[in-house]
Length: 117
Image (cartoon, rainbow, N blue to C red):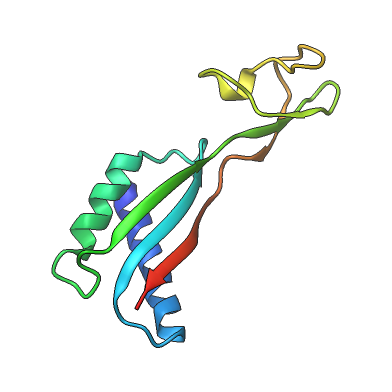
């Protein structure tokens, strides 16, 4: 379950940011992740809860927001958001090409927002 190491890294980032702004109580962390980030949201939420229990971050919430996948067609270059389960092999809506697409977004994982007091 790599979500535990992801949660650890996210909390390290949060702790560093809180130190810069002289605040101590973490209320909320909003994390954006791409649909191709190989992340199980429920597992990350669980890992966050486990890692914050008994710490100064206990009671903080994590909010996860999924970013869509955006591809550029390998045939005609059109940018599009694929539909269905086979994200990387979705046909281009302009020319129908199914392979050779370039991933423009959807692999990302970052802290978007921190609320603290």
